[in-house]
Image 1 (cartoon, rainbow, N blue to C red):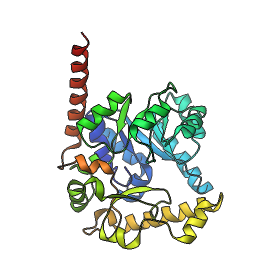
Image 2 (cartoon, helix red, strand yellow):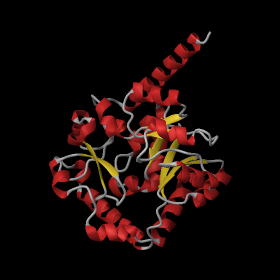
Image 3 (cartoon, rainbow, N blue to C red):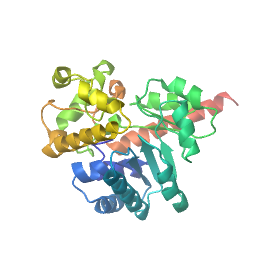
Length: 306
């Protein structure tokens, strides 16, 4: 949900029965909240559980130390559900476990899931080459709950993922097209109007594939990292420096106001779930509708087996 996870949206999702996820970089550098104050604002809006996303990329010692402080702040605020990605999550598990929390880790294939489980986490999903069906075939025997991430924007997709055997679904793009999200109306409208074929993966934002809406700007600058960046991303040490450069550039772009821009001369993050998103709707209504669809499917299944 970076950069769109403002406190009001996180609270609305949790209050309706989902688990809204705080992204600390988004909270602090995009929406201008001190992390503690951001959690306090969420708590004024709901007393339901919330989670936090932890990017554990070891770009620098400074970044790692800062992320560790943010995890401590989250634990102080009562957060007990964390989602990690882009690195080894063991230190997060060691911090969160004694407090009674759980850690889910984004994975794209079996070898990463095994490493994550070895570190003490659960399993999840990330933008990877495998379909939801293939991923659960690969991971279904590991004995851990799996969360399907990516490509789901309506109740039918949610129910289908549960029927495959997933324990839950992670939604991102669907919640951008909501009144609670502070993204510019043009961004939300672009999501509603986009189709699956309008989504492309670009390396030019973070150095790893990121789904964005194809705009004239994206077509002009291309989706592959430049030759110097590709060379740096291949190096064991230089890849961390390159990702730091990407992160600083992204933060500067957002600081400049691209999240609230009225043109598409930047990157609008969105997944293929845009194909199922046809309107801007309240976040709580989306959560409740998805839950109702899951209950109806479960009840229908129960009746058919009796």
